[in-house]
Length: 185
Image 1 (spheres, rainbow, N blue to C red):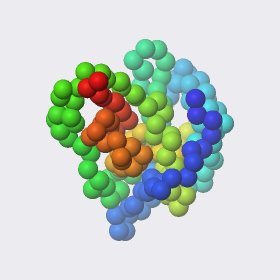
Image 2: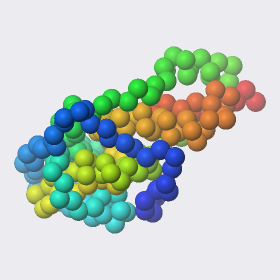
Image 3: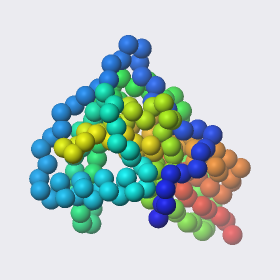
Image 4: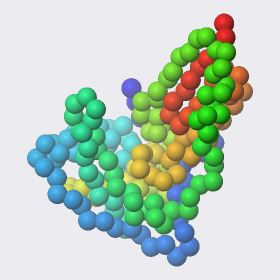
């Protein structure tokens, strides 16, 4: 498991706002007792890892929970208001049909699904305050990239393409947080 902040990389996640955009604030939704219990657990974990820090940011996104596939609750931050005023990245996400074409003739496959992959990319220090999440206890800001930010998939794809640049389309294909390794022999 992750043991703290990721190393500095060539590209941190940047959140560039449209000209004239004001801080986005949304009211926190009501949470059930099981959700409040899970919120405390998640906050303790994220704080211990350094993935969030207390914040007094004028931005504030609400928290909600969705059921996980197996058991438990997944904490989500509703960044829809922030995403509306964020300038969208133009970095291309690969076409799935083109990626699948690379697999033709391959006999051996391995798939790696990067658990917590987004948390391996820092948010640009000057943009952390824009990721502020509001809870009933206090506000926090992310220091690492998290799901729900409009340009997170592009930033992650850019990072992975950089890491595996020399192997892309030879024996590795990457689609967001999934890495496929393939070979004919």
